[in-house]
Length: 323
Image (cartoon, rainbow, N blue to C red):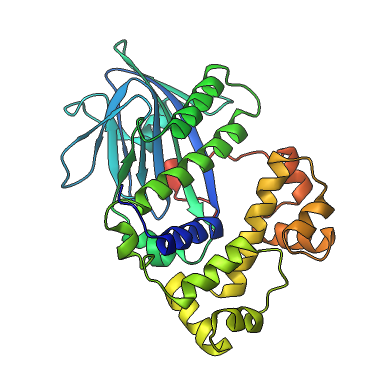
């Protein structure tokens, strides 16, 4: 990984803080060789996490890619592809596979012969940030976060494995939350890969980068477009136009996402009251935070903290992923 400049690092951190990954876990697959399935192209970004064994990924025009235990493959553009135990194994459409072998009550798919075992966690994801149209489209058709990408990644995969070993009620909600973290890590690794940050314009030392840095570091301040513009020595009009051109969104909209993502983090990692979280993230009251949180995520802070929202089971081929 190339070492990024401080400006690029801050800009990347701001970008990742301003987006929210929403995962939908379609199925946990317990597969015995020989097996193979094909996934049609759709608008939904997709992922496959290899929990045990190995398999091969095949995309049109690309040599088969071997995926091993602990590897996570991301297909940001929802490209058509096939997954199988060996490159020469025949495949059937995923829709046909799930019709012949319906998922059980825990969204577990069992299929294949009597050969070696592969366990996959398959799903899709969307991003709640409108700036994804700027940088998500520049990502490759697929990329792999391998098991050696870092101890933190390995720990998350271990947690997914542990949940898969004792799958039961509520497992899909746990899978989805862990997948959110894994996908965020995968995006971070990919965005800091050689040349990627530069291609996304994250390495520009500009007043826009400074504005984004201020919003990320001080989300609790009572920011207005005017006060932010004064801080970086720009007019309101110029800052608004330049910020949208470089970051894909307005400064105030990005600030809202930073605040709400921090609020979500505090809800699940600490014991602060909603009122205290509101003050820490720049909201005047718990009511203001609750209103903004529900508008962004579709649920109240209390429901999010309790983790009581059931995760819908969706099929990969549907292309239906909440953004």
